[in-house]
Image (tube, rainbow, N blue to C red; front, side, top):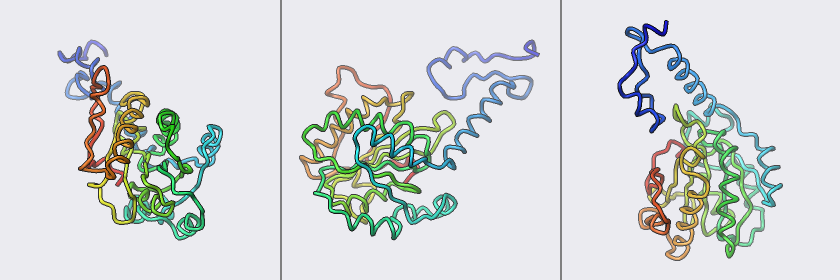
Amino acid sequence: MSDFLEKNPWNALRQFTNARIALGRAGNSLPTAPLLAFNLSHAQARDAVHHPLDTEVLHEQLRAQSFSTLDVHSAAPDREHYLRRPDLGRRLSDESRAALGQLKVDSPDVVFVIADGLSAFAASKQSIPLLQAVCAKLTDWKIGPVVVARQARVALGDEIGELLNAKLVVMLIGERPGLSSPDSLGIYLTYAPKLGCSDAQRNCISNVRPEGLNYESAAHKLHYLLTHARRLGLTGVGLKDDSDALLPSTPTTPAVSNNPNTGAT
């Protein structure tokens, strides 16, 4: 069968990208191997969207790293409602809102929220290593409890931050999975979070995963943005990311945008 496969002259370029190029062909069709690989990647992307976040394990892992934690749920009662009604994922459930409202938290400088978003795989795999990397840099910051949020969209962090009276909220959320990245994490940073904030009022760092923007690079960018957000009293279009200028070499992976569309909003 291999005698009938026609190799693509661009084959050498495949070492530089995960994009599906130079796959070859067998007659008028794809060869069996890349076709099966595509079907596997498609299944992994679908699984990432529908797979539930194991919050019990995540809470245990966070507490093992000395983080205090809270658990919340959006107004979307299940995954079906979450996918069909994005608006419900942007507001807390009545129970979670009441629970946060009764807490007595001493106005933290920053609250981190870990949310399933569109990929629970990303939240469970990438969030804790990233938290460890960035919190090591926040030595003079008052860090609030880590909030684990289910059926969450990005804007859910605004209500959480407002109820906890946080100066800044950082949303670590699973991005819309691609065919080569079912576990990519997005970071959304908002100053003075409150209900009604728009995407123009937040900064985004995307594609956080070992194969994309690694934890140390993402933590460097996030620390830079947090520091300048606190100094300037703003985030969003007014806060530019010049963190690459502080590095000995510039990362090649585009990662930051002020008004992103990564699919979890």
